[in-house]
Length: 396
Figure 1 (cartoon, rainbow, N blue to C red):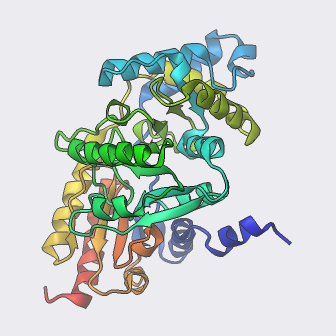
Figure 2 (figure 1 turned 120 degrees about the vertical axis):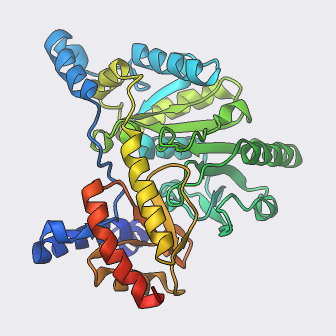
């Protein structure tokens, strides 16, 4: 018999992954070129050439025992120093290597934070719609998830409800901006309002409340939009970063956590997170990829390709009669379904070989997520299928 904690995980296995597997089956039936899989946020842009060059250079020139060996559980000192310097240059912060813990991607970063700060029954607030895997991370360390209802007008956080749902048990607030699944970027004013609310609540309850910013999509911002750096607005803030999207390296599992010195009891928290990195089984972030990141610190993905897809798909869908908020970042469109049952809408879409993810998988029913991190050729070809889907519901 499996452990009780795993029963819900097995019962509610990722719908996104299920859709991805469904896509493979459809490809076998109809041919890959005739299936339009928008289910998985898997980057379609290759990693920058510098990444492969760095791998070869490191393998050819550096000490193999170092490149493939153990290091401090927080990561190589020179890598962490390079990252802290880069952050300081970009955002006018004041970090050093001790503020950076290298992680096995952002997911691992979130897990080591929760392991380090949560006691049984502590509450973590999330804003719907949100990446539902957060539930498993939080519950895995005996925390409780508190969901703030979605603001479907513009998908900015519902701050009135947020104020009401902070309690004595609130230990952390988790935000994701640019957001998966909406593509919305939380404005500076929104971050300031969240920070002010939390500062007031910390005084009211006389204990720290952490703000955790999950930022794998930070570099994917369009139309000149900027993503506020939260440690500049709130002292008890963690930043969780991943190179999965910014350098198209999702399978390499490399990222980091930032813990600012201004955080309450920062030294102990840094130590706890570093130890958690070891005892959850990661031990340390992949050594070779740490070295690669240091050499590619200023590299960027080709954002223009995603932006072209974003505009093309948004303009087409809205011209067909669908409703959606134009994404400011990431590579997702969150489409309002013309019927209330988003799963039924996904089933209808599948008749045209369109694979979409129901919004109920993000705690926001009545919507679907479309991941436009696909080839432009495939996206263009899919538009006829989207048009046929629209004709089921609209007179066009």
